Image (cartoon, rainbow, N blue to C red):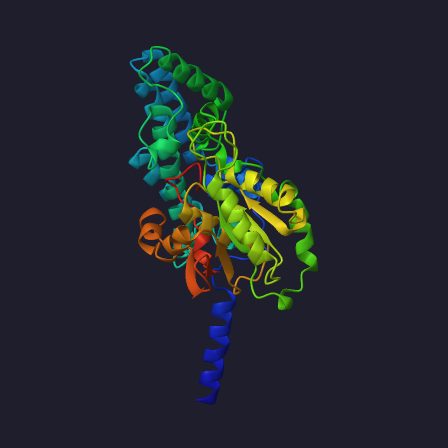
Length: 413
């Protein structure tokens, strides 16, 4: 009996040692940050050479891309409408299933796909909602998510479908203008030339989704990336010298508020929130402030809330640059917190330590009761509540589920 329990104990250790989990040591790979943020599996297929070779040499998958290119060429020749040209770029249910079935057939634990899942897909956390599945099933779910994300991007930024937040995220063109069909045809023709000899089964659709975002000037998901080499460089380089035992919190998060008028760089609300955060920062409870907010209000503004708040903190409130992180991509209060949790994780800060939100009273209490909004918009809670410290400060603990990509928000996935 003693030997039985010893064997059981050893097997449980082995099970947990091999458990699927995201890792703070993992670094996302790739060059196109819009692609990395939205379609990480497909990005891996291009940037993990063994998988690129395996997929690109598989006859079944190569025939799929050849058929797709022919369908696109046929739609260009027929030229019935701009939507008829767009349609073959999207993945049909049959194509999604066929590719998923083929990936399942190709998958082996120790081949290129198995190692991609083990060494990249799982530790990235980008598909963490599927972590309870077997590695092969997780691979297929990640593919299905990316395929649907590509379809959604094309529907919104080529076909003109309303996004979830049309006031700030809509297409930049009037699809009913007589010049629009030519714009679509020109883009489709360029993708066909670019992908004419492609071997990767998803490439024409992926490239067209990225093209659609690009022509709309909608690469907000990649603003200033990689942040740790750009706007966050000074604070990121300071991380290695932080003695976290000295601090109660990882950081103070300041959610931005966009201006109402075009041409205005920073709102009165954002200035007020910066002042509140600076007073809290002066107490020495944390080594960093993180300002969060993208290019949201008004429509197609050139100003990112986080960038402008950082300027105010440095120039007006004399907060040192190496004490400030920016998160310039969040488009909603829910993603202010989610993206903050992601950066805490990606930058290797203590993930079991709380952070504080510092903002005005109305928003502070709104965030404390934002669970229904988070579940509706994200499908999970990116934080758990800690203590309320004051009318303007609330503790939060980041959650690992924050790493999950949102396939329906290409500007802030």
